[in-house]
Image (cartoon, rainbow, N blue to C red; front, side, top):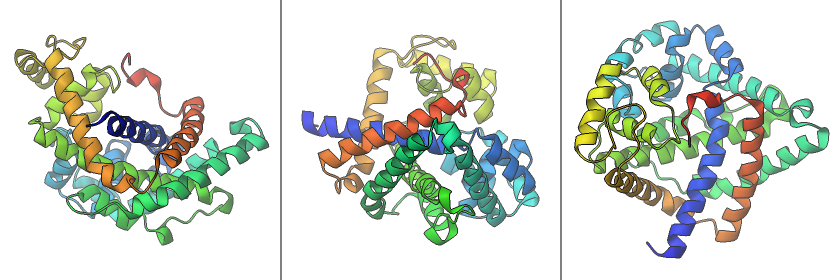
Length: 309
């Protein structure tokens, strides 16, 4: 990869991560959790149901395959039981209602600090949507199961805010969700190419210090400490981790493998991003930062779950 290509790939990665904070906030939002509970979903089932609902009444095997890093036993304890609590179409509708409520909390004049600040965020959201429109149009469905399901569930006619002043933010959340699931499907293909199982992938990810801590990762993905420890020991023996403890860092070979996988992930989305020139990409990064700062300031995503990075 040339220096200019590497720089552009890094800019796309950075913009994507900044935008993704808005999508990720919906998994921690009390407003979204309340909307899902009102639809009948118990808290323990909400995450798996809300992300797999665009696939229909998915089986535990399908959810395990498309989510990749979750314990099969953890998934099977929640799917398909979640569909007895709420049908997939009901889950999708409740999710959007909850996200709209979250947007009302994030993007009010009082939350933004002033009416002028809110208008600046609204303008940034509109510019981001305009910049992303050709990127989303260029995203191909081939091999992208979760992206394909979400692209159907989040058609424009389905993403309608009850409060028209929030429409641009709800639309932006939907756009970012499609961007995230597209890149996510590409990332899973990269992990497979790298020869990593789902558990191995998240053990290595935790060791970067930029993801969930090992404790938070085990709890959210349903792996036991014994399963985690055995896998960490294997990765340490392979020279990918410094040791098998929760405080392990990536060894040199682990750093190289992670970098190679991230490069493959960058390659998996590069074609869709070719529609933006470097100037448009730089402007998008700036607007994405403003939105990410608002999400961070809200405290919706708890920092204590994440590592030292």
